Image: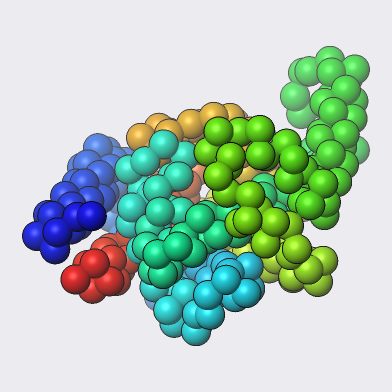
Length: 316
């Protein structure tokens, strides 16, 4: 068991790593130096920017509600406590591969002996968000093939096979999501879960109604952060129709989800995907890069700074 000084030291190290990563990203963001906000943006533009920031809080509030539903039978949290755990998770996850540290940052708010339950419950929430991204991506890809078949020179057969493959994956994901109890035996074959049979049994009893609520909240979150992306595109003078925006943004998130990455290159991957997909409808490359980067700073960096305060308070 770690002593209190060790816990404090670990907290300080984690916070410094988190802040250091944010500062590194800002310093290396060369495009920021070329922006003259006062010269090119009106008060109405800044209202749009303010709305994006407000939506950030809505985005993570929905995630807090989702997490609260999944862990409520394990340990009761009020909304504010759940939100603190979410923000703390972002702080820890920002410098870890695929932000897996978010799980650890959340479950430290739970009582000892219940944290494994929390890890598994968090996994269900992440799985629901993954399914949501796949569904939206399939619709976006299908709409692209229907309305803009000649915008990209790719073999039509490849497009059809890709759509069919994504639909098959989606069906499998739904079968797994709504049949957690049936895959328990498979999970028990993994070494980590060998001694977690009781926790898995408890989790496998998750009500269908809770799974549906989690999925609906995942859709709500998806709508919020895609709306943020759309508003930032407007802010940086990229004017797309709703249809064009849905297609481009859904494909960015689809491929960003499917491509394995780490936090160090996540922003670069999303930026490249945004240039490719949004670039189908707009030549404003700088605006696309700025939109993607500012979305990352607003949805990850700001919550990470807020979460550091909650993390320190909880550890102390």
